[in-house]
Amino acid sequence: MNKRITVLSGDYIGPEIVEQGILALEAAARRFGHRFEFCRVDFGGAAIDSAGVPFPEETRKACEEADAVLLGSVGGPKWDSVPKEIRPEKGLLQMRSALGLFGNLRPAKLHPQLAFACPLRPEIVEKGIDIMTVRELTGGIYFGSHETSVQNGERVAADLMAYSEHEIDRILRVGFEAARKRRKRLTSVEKSNVLDCSRLWKERAHALSAEYPDVELIDMLVDNAAMQLVRDPSQFDVLVTENMFGDILSDESSMIVGSIGMMPSASLRDDSFGVYEPIHGSAPDIAGRDLANPIGTILSAAMMLRYSFGMAREADAVEAAVDAVLDSGLRTADIMSAGMKRAGCREMGAAIAAAIG
Ligand code: NAD
Ligand code: IPM
Ligand code: MN
Figure 1 (cartoon, helix red, strand yellow):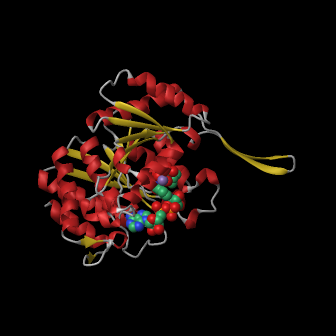
Figure 2: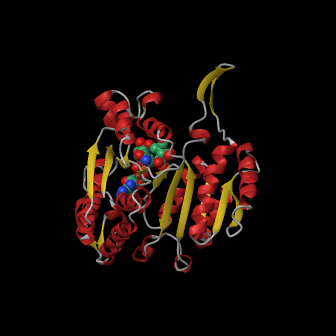
Figure 3: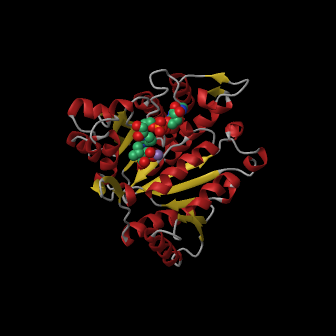
């Protein structure tokens, strides 16, 4: 098959990790006889520098014309003082919204080789960790009005969280469908003891549940969910939640599978198009030193093969290559332990590409 992939490397470690994702995709294309064409365009801080805005029209077009998008990470201290309307992170939100990417899948699966890197006690880790967080990505407080006004002589900041029924229903359906293909337990995470958005969310979850009699629906308040994730993560199969709760809980889940550098994501809409990126940020503290773990990006590339291209064998091959390289003892700094062999970002990426074949 021929596929066009738009590449948004982004900022700081973005280009370092994305190059390893491309190597994995090229290796899969070679092994399975496909042709992938890569088109690199500026995004985030890099686009502010070259075009004055983080998500230029040309970048939007390049995304829309592609079969899928591979993204690194955006933002960092260089652009921390630019006006909020053109921050790199604003470009990321504009991109998600413009492309209609409402469904964000963030799988957290503990590779047994990394059990030592999980900060939880061994008897908790032994029960296994395999959680799919389904995060709503184009609504909620990220996309409500944000303003700071002066009232009674002091500044007052306000950020609005709003959700419509159709936005809630479509993401809940992604959650139910994901649970149906997995262990059939869906935990709906909200704050219905306080928020109207969450009360509507919980009501819709129970209404839709009638259409998914094979899926067990569990309601959980978000503060409890944050605690349960470290008390006993094996209780979770699929978590479905709104935008900001999903952002926070997915970073929490990344650490219990060893490192944020391990976690991939897919941002999807109703058709096969998607944007694929690790869940971490641009890691300015380690950028330019060949220290970043590229596995989150490489596993994101595997999700691209699976979800956008329908290439299950190819995706399996990339995931198996990651496993094989972890088995071989190669480790980036974030997942290093005694007796293992330390690798940089490039060496790790090259080893995984070689293992793909
Ligand atoms: P971060 O995820 O960039 O870094 C948090 C910590 O995790 C750092 O110590 C970093 O070194 C480490 N880390 C992250 N990725 C790693 C990897 N692949 N390998 C090894 N270690 C890794 O979060 P932050 O420091 O809060 O944010 C930095 C910038 O990134 C901010 O501007 C933020 O807005 C942006 N950000 C962007 C995205 C995105 O592009 N999707 C996501 C999150 C944060
Ligand atoms: C993520 C990031 C973004 C988010 C930021 C950079 C806007 O943290 O992709 O998880 O909060 O969605
Ligand atoms: Mn985040």
